[in-house]
Image: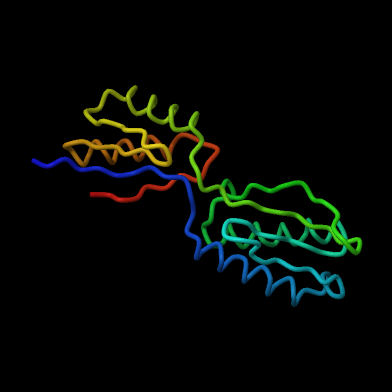
Length: 163
């Protein structure tokens, strides 16, 4: 019988994040409390989002709208690494938000340790940016997935490449 496997990765669906950004920008453009504030929510590079407004409280409110839209699109807030707000030219305030896309090595080590502690007949392999879990029984792999999701990690984990 061939071995089955799956990967544990850190990341989110970029299309869902894009949809959340578009919905948040549309809401900010139509809401009364954002009128005449010139508030912008947009991509700033491949893995970064930029929230900018003419005041600190409006920038924070726009960030809250973005977070709300992410939750509605089922994008984990753990995927958003919010940087402190900073002042840019013209007295405007910018908040940069980075998407978390890499697995920290200490998190990978703790997940591998937890998997080995279950005593199931599976072999976790740390491959740097992901963890591959292989085993003969699919039931064991499903138990590992349930165990990993039950633990509260500081990263948006997802299971991919299920074979």
